[in-house]
Amino acid sequence: MPDIAELSVKLPAEHFFETCNYKNGDTVKSFNLRKFFCKSGISALPEATFSSDHLAAIVCLICFKDSPYIVLYISLPHVIFDGTAAVALFNNWAECTRNLDNPDHKLKYPPVNDCKVVRDYFDTVTAIEPPHTKHFKDLGAESLVKVPPGAIAALLLAAPDIPAFEEQHLLHFTAEKLEQLRQDVDKAQTTNLALAALLTKTILQANIQIFNSMPTWSYVMFLYDCRHHTEVPMTYSGNLSFSAVAPLESQTVLDGSYKEIAQAIKEHCSKVSSEYAKLLIYTVKNEIGVLFQAGISLCNSPDTSYVGISNVRYMPMHLIDFGYGGPDILSSAYFIREGMQRIYSNKQDGGIDLFMNVKDDLFEYLKKSDELLKYADIIF
Image 1: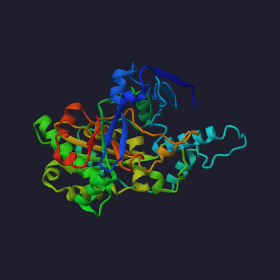
Image 2: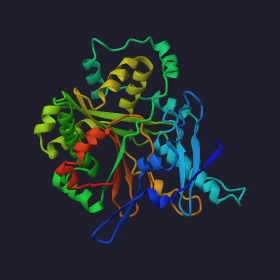
Image 3: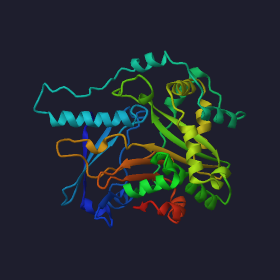
Image 4: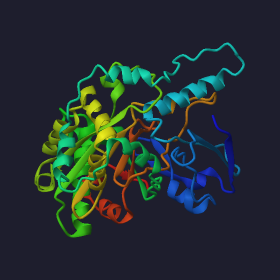
């Protein structure tokens, strides 16, 4: 692990809290990162990028004036870690910390660090093209960037780091409201699909207002952990996350019910398998132009509407315990891309926190959405 930088803020942590009080007596506190960056004297936190500095992790401990709270900030490069591996790293680090007095302690779930287990597994798999890969090939058939396979690695290593997108917003859904949303959309679907349907339509409506035009496509992306679909050990410590994308015609989204939108998303994004994952690995190695086409399409623009969803509720971040109990509040400091949403469990009331990376002008329209406000509380 790297050295841990210590930062001091001359204000109490409570100065950056946002509090929601509910009729059932629940009180939910959130940490307002935008207020923190504006008023703490810390305008930004360092990011581990690996491509430019070869750091696998950056750790900061932030202390506050006259406050019992501290912030443990950890930045990891996605090129090395996915969410599952990152949470495993935190839990193993915390487990070692709790057992410093026992030099013979063995980790309960030691990590698998050998990439060979992944290569060996995928050598046994036959690649199948995911539907969204064909969509992006057809979309950019005449303009796909052509790069010789042997030059792709050098191209990726030479690419500059993408700056973090800092226009972040936070919505909170209580457990009751989240279940109400699922019942209202389609009780046969998961809450994730119900939430995705709600966001897909409301963000499309906001885009139409901002750009004064109808985007051709509305894209919905779900990230999934390939460990759940392969024989690779769950303790593998690298990046084994892949994406499934639903390309939906915007007019169909606008005219359809939330139930119909949820079903359309499911038809695309539930099609995940190791065979699809192998084709995506092949695409990175041999057809980088397809990724460029996807990259310029997955955004909010006059031509496209975009919702990317990373569900980290199944990652037990709230259980990471360095000997003082798990964290009271979880937060997410940075996203790389506009349009990404990240779902966290909120242990204070059993609901969820939805961190949204959308432009401020788009969010102004979302704040006026009666459908969204029927289920969500705007925190910042």
